[in-house]
Image 1 (cartoon, rainbow, N blue to C red):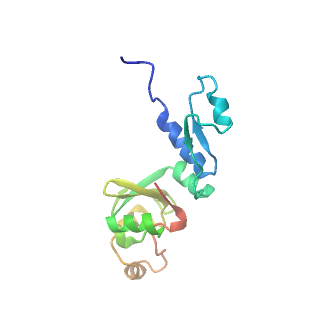
Image 2: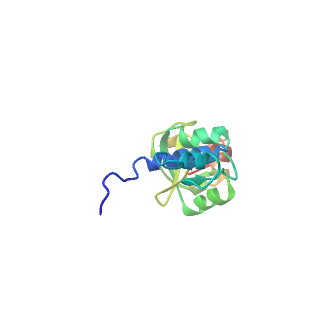
Image 3: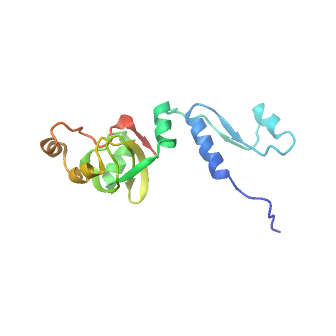
Length: 163
């Protein structure tokens, strides 16, 4: 038997909203409000629907804005080693791990950081797309020789958020 009026319409946006809220320190429950007693059960802490627990590490307001609200202007492609360091160590993105650039962006714009076709995170670039393309793959001393007054990192860890 097929139930045509049952679906998951809007579920993706509900889960995304739950993720935003839990990163702000707010517990979320998604439940069927048309079933008698469901909302009362959820409000009183009894099992009802799907519970999303508060994040163990709530994100700062800036990082939430960066992740969810700030539009991106381009992409920086990185090797798997750089992606691993960004995910595990919370480090800044240095030019040595960059393999390519997609799109046009200026210093101060938000960019996606991508490895093997997967978005690793999002950050505020210290460089334009043209500058990143010029210094990609370089070690820090080489960048300093080429651009003596430039920042060491393409995206500083304080201005980067994991996807």
